[in-house]
Length: 313
Ligand SMILES: Nc1nc2c(ncn2[C@@H]2O[C@H](COP(=O)(O)OP(=O)(O)OP(=O)(O)O)[C@@H](O)[C@H]2O)c(=O)[nH]1
Ligand SMILES: [Mg+2]
Image (cartoon, rainbow, N blue to C red; front, top):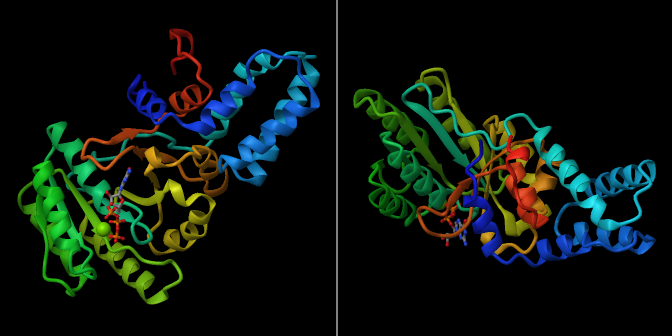
């Protein structure tokens, strides 16, 4: 079962304007043409994306016709289930990270500033709290301050950081980190890579090399390679995914800065367009501001609906 409440309360405390708009639309009033127009424009403005919006609205409209629904309130529950299905049809949606075979290697990739280093620290703290041991690999050797930043994250989480000097070969750092984790029987290795634009082919090639070395050295290969996506970037974040997926086959997305976006609909378009599961959501800058993604918690928070025991998954 998903963590009951954590995500919901944090999501609600963001006082998401978009979410309120969507929820208000389903207050009980007669179903008119303007409802459909408003729903469409609300979804679109909330970063749900054109195709997903059209699919959702036409699906709901068909159901309303079939069941002769006359009031918007009757549609709320049906819409909620459509949204949950839209997310849950992606295998692995909301699944915890696989750290079953020590040392389990997790790689974080993404464009500049998406939140990789912060997320590496958050994940390290989360695993340390679960009683697991973690090594952080400072594979961002490009930016002068990056190694120092990861060391601070490591200190906060209580995790060891393996680093070389600024400008050194990032694949060599990864090699060192995995060897060190094997020797010390560490459970998890989290690799913080440098931010890069997906259009820079030399940097993508370097990332592929990091992936190859990690895949070769880790028992059973890389466990998780996660695209760290800034939710404020919205639809612009999508073009990256395919190119990153070629360099390191992705197993999911971590959606950061969800506390800063007024457009929570990005979660729905990621599911439909990228066909990648959202695994965790970043809800702040603090080391504990990370929550497992739960489709049902997300949808219920969005539509301001209460969960009951009947609809627990
Ligand atoms: N509000 C909020 N801020 C976040 C979140 N995650 C990261 N940040 C902030 O986003 C900024 C960039 O985060 P980093 O972790 O340095 O991003 P990065 O992907 O490692 O950046 P590069 O290594 O330069 O590519 C920092 O100011 C973080 O504090 C989040 O979930 N919520
Ligand atoms: Mg970084």
